Image 1 (cartoon, helix red, strand yellow):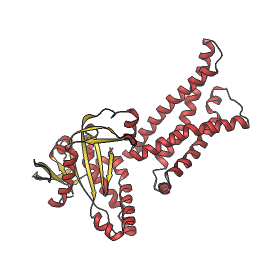
Image 2 (cartoon, rainbow, N blue to C red):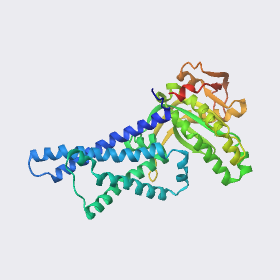
Image 3 (cartoon, helix red, strand yellow):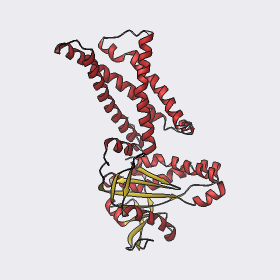
Image 4 (tube, one colour):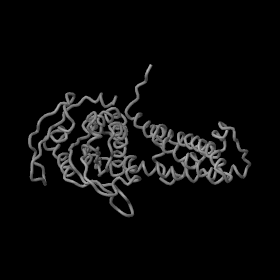
Length: 362
């Protein structure tokens, strides 16, 4: 019997396997360096050392990385682990470093690779402490990388590491502007602190649906979240269009909790547009990837127009055309909309309904 995995689980498995490949390469590199340093003079001795040290390095790195990545991708996202979000950044880093360092030290001192190859080394108290201390250094670096990736998003963090946007260039992207309905009135009733908690809870509840649809969270602006897709990533399964409906379903499923805690059911409205932007890195003290182009201004204006035309979701004709035929969606032609601050009107549609079952199995 086969078990169907959700899109979120498959995305996390992809990240997990990517970490495993990187860990294997790093372990092989450390093993090769160790062999070169410790081998006796002579090509035969070096080759023998490489044949032992490289597999050991790979085994240690993969075992350690699998434990750490497994916790990061499959344990910490659970609702029962949300208490970590309340801790200061430094406390989370220290806690994770100690836990992951203990895992790395356990793998190092138990010597699974050496046992497999029959070259077990006996650790005394001094060498054991040194091994534990050395394991904390790379683990601390890994923890900082995971925390930084969590702050800016894994795709953005990977792009920053690889320097993808170091030189600005043009690319076509979908932009989905999502706004929390009635947030001003909610803030007046709840007060600033509870209003912040309300918005934080909303954004937390929709995080997994956004991940399910492979969206990148570009930024949070007050009560609004901006989600983006490169055109090639957005077209499959009409992800940018489905994303809002999956987000609304997640909030509806959690409505009782919001009613109990805040006395209100959160609702969303949104606008979707597609066009060319200039993407590139900016900043010195704080690096960030930014997008410049009329497509973002237009998407923002379309989101504002939802109030005027009485539609909770507006999509431009350009965005819908790029997504192809959508028999599972029900749309209403709004004609050419005149948007504030824009000379030329834009052809748009009201997206009234969409079947999201395809996205759940995508």
